[in-house]
Image 1 (cartoon, rainbow, N blue to C red):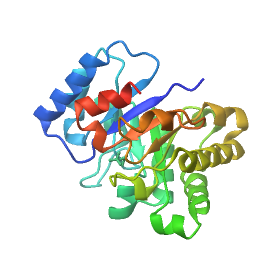
Image 2: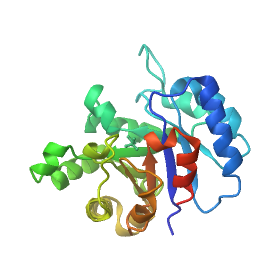
Image 3: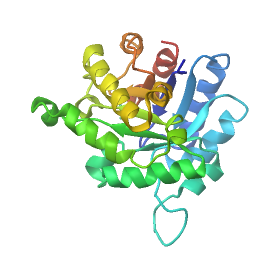
Image 4: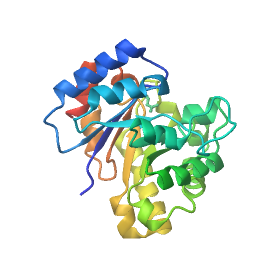
Length: 249
Ligand code: PGA
């Protein structure tokens, strides 16, 4: 049985006071939920403050990116050991916004995924096709390249802890969600690829999230798909009411 993950990706939102307030409300109102894992991924600047708030609860902390070296002359970067030190359990890697605006590639995602595991951070590796790629019928080819290159060289043992997020780029922040059929087709394909890479049994343990305009109204039907093991939530995670509704799908 794969325990579902509901992860809030706050992106570049929330000042300290706002972040603390949101985290506190989430903590207070999700106290007894044990059958799913809640992860908050705030910006770097408020990771410590949010960690302080969720201390003692089962809510996990995630970062939205990191560099692939542990220290050194890399002005402006944040290392995996720094994230671990601050109390992060997870790190989102290869989000489409990072691929689109900041030059993230499958190769850099791969370097980051490997170092994340070696430091004890669980990567949430994002994959997804653009609208143009979907319209050209390239969805599965694009996903295959992202999965095979992005996750190459991970051990079978590491693979069991891995989290993958399928986020069609055309569904992110657009209000346009993939239908359960569209999502499940790709989620199932990803699990098949993971089976080829890490063995069928390990692939069954890997949690594959869906992301892209998830909201309180569409979460339940998406979660009813066999290969959807949770959600990466952007917009709907910024507001306590909508995030809690999604958490309680
Ligand atoms: P969205 O973002 O829920 O606002 O579409 C999801 C994501 O980018 O992770």
